[in-house]
Amino acid sequence: MKTYNNILFLGLFLFITAAQAQLAEDSELYQTLKQKDSILFDAAFNRCDVPTLEAIFTADFEFYHDKGGFSEGRDVFLRPVKESCASWDTNRPQPSKRILLPGSLKVFPLYKNGELYGAIQHGVHRFESLNTNNEYEKGDVAKFTHVWIKEGTHWKVKRELSYDHQYKPE
Image (tube, rainbow, N blue to C red):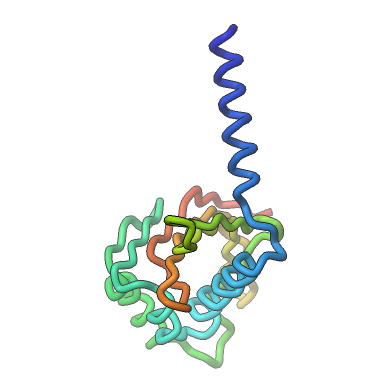
């Protein structure tokens, strides 16, 4: 019983500590990275804006996806995006879209010697795709985690994890 209580206490302590480290939604860093998240996915899904995507990822970017595998390097990751964007018909609705689920976004600052150098951003999003009737159908809901690095005054994504994809049409 004592071991169970110790484990329970440790789990509760870690949960409370993590919750306190999360930034408030009205903080400057939270708002900055929320805006960057919006820019990233708007460039990828709404505008096929490859130059913006190139600027938002570090050259040594790594992408880990539970269904699509691992991509090492920004150029390797963006190659299929560039190919898809080259054939995108801008007169049609976007073929798929990403929706950030309200209240799911969390930001955790990273410090070294008291200096802010990065942040971890975590959230949950839903994807929708056009069906044969040109209507959007709800698809996967997934979790994502971005490791943002501050390079001078610019924030860039160095690592991205996309996982726990589950088909949830409701």
